[in-house]
Length: 283
Image (cartoon, rainbow, N blue to C red; front, side, top):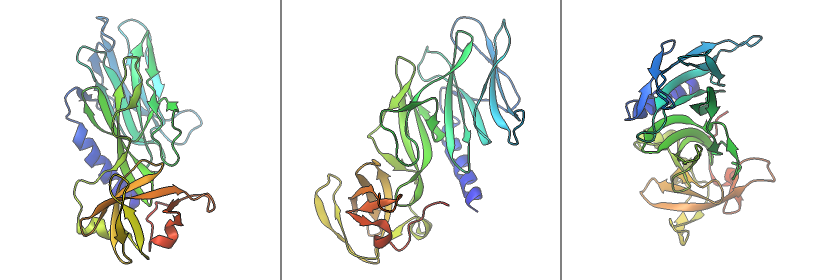
């Protein structure tokens, strides 16, 4: 069931961005011709699922064939649900290759590849990964599934473990030097199009005790009572989570890592296990 839900989420996310301006989807095994670097020579781009020697799983491999020279390939870690696009974030700029998919048990990664001097080069992303992000660290991929494209930016959606496991999005802008930086308000925003009765049943937290909360600016605002349900809607993964209560109230809660337990979170200094009836983390 978890796998089916994840696949349906992937399809919904891809549907949001697949028809965006500046984005051209590639079909598995087919070639698309494009002058990737704007030098007047046309390259042919394709991708395939390839089983490396000695490996059990297939991996998504992107290949660029120049007008003159041998094909150049880049092997991603994508095992399932892979999609590849040609993207142009800036009018008149180079056309880059985007590969996005599942690398391990519903964990999603996106690669942005640039054709330069006859090579496929990875474009760096800041760390937006699951768990404790390393602020200031950069990787040759972005954490999360490709969700949408806009002028000079991408939005990726990946699972986060913050008072439960849920999918949250971050946006990234391409810098003039060819790497990505965060381009949003600093929050992982939960991917919820519509809050329904099912959302409250399966995605919300039910309080076991009274819990003080703050307003959106961090000022004391009141108390949540035992039996009330709240839905986490965003987090900075450092000090606060944003929530919506079932009665419509919104607010924030102070968080910190639960070092004594070794994982999970403290809310207002208390263990999440002591505050909520059930915290829906993925297995």
